[in-house]
Amino acid sequence: MVELDMPLIAKQHPSKIVVVIGALAAGKDVFAHYLQQRHSVVVVEVGAFARRLAKEANKTGPQLYDASAKKMAKHGPEHVISRLVAEIRQNDEWQAVPLVITGVRTPAEAITLKEQFGSDLILAYIRVGDQSARYDRVQQRDHLTYPDDFQEFVQQDESLKADFALDNTAELADVVLWNNGSLDEFYRQIEAEIVPHILEQV
Image (cartoon, rainbow, N blue to C red; front, top):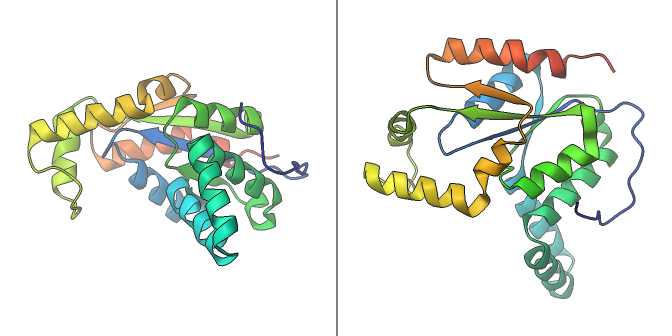
């Protein structure tokens, strides 16, 4: 478990938190957008949060920014997660609404969040059985970093899974959703498996 940078503040009204993980083009953004539009959750993207931390550090001057950058490099993504945990606990606006966290990849990140929030958090893994289906989705996106060739996509996909030990993270999941069929089928799974958690009375 990663040590937090600041003391934790006890929550009187804990948020319900859903951490969503999955491979490239599994449907994580669709999942988050659906819950945001349908159930007014707040979506927190880890990468955007990390960029905000760097930007805020930069405003305070180069020395503090350099120290922050070195610390983030030393501790890795889990350092960002520890900062996110602290902000969730102190952000009054986030206390009153369910949160969906995207961009979590490694087992260490997932374990840190699960240990900090306990039963207030569920880890949802989106699985797609057909790799070619995810490739087809990638081709419909306007994104320069996505490969045009299927074999290149497979290589990049496997490389990312290995780099982040995504299969190990998936083993920690509380809920597995399958995104093989229509959007309506996917939404029905979200309603059945996820919505009861975020609407649960605390």
